[in-house]
Length: 312
Image 1: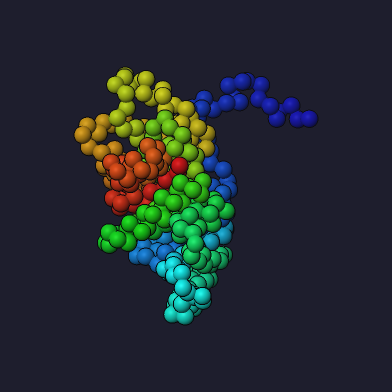
Image 2: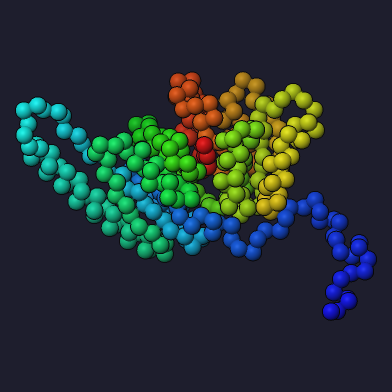
């Protein structure tokens, strides 16, 4: 054994200047952990950009893209005297299925043009709610992606129903891609909205492949307790240390929203940092309460001009 393999002076064995720095990033691309990505397509404005964003991530990860084409089938009104299905409705079903088959072929050709491995799964929602079917299919993926229409409130409402269903019932993180955004993925800069809750913890962990690929990540704590800055920093030190162990370069920002919604503070911070992604926990106060009173999840879904990754 070569005795020179080991330094005689302990000071030579460690670079004391690097102990406080983030761990070196793994040689493998962190995005390869997204081996299966599902994108929900309900034929709404914003679907095209969602497919582009999801396809770009799948190509970068060398993974597989599952396009979940939702087909909401009309339901026949109950008729006690009807012995056979309405012929007009049967014909309508055939037309919808034929159209869906054509659209599936078009999307499959698009995946090939993007050099993305993937498939198109058409889900007929006849007896089940479409969002529940999308959630069940998304459970087989590492990440779900949904587009958000920007101009039509009715289309945005439909997209929100799919988003809420997938977020609450799939157990998967959901990346919402607003129509009209550049959807740069992975992001160069990201903002993580942090609170000491299971939802925020899950979101930070689920977003690790994206955060590890970013140049800088800003951890934002809104409405921190009225304590010295040192005490607040100590409360989030566990998160900062965890992220740094994964090679994430983090900054900490403490801010008070006053009378402004938390969502507005996060959006302002994302704009100030020129971030391309926001990461937050979703529906920490329950979906019905947020629907009735408003809340950070709903507001970020409708108002964010950049993609948002939610976890529940």
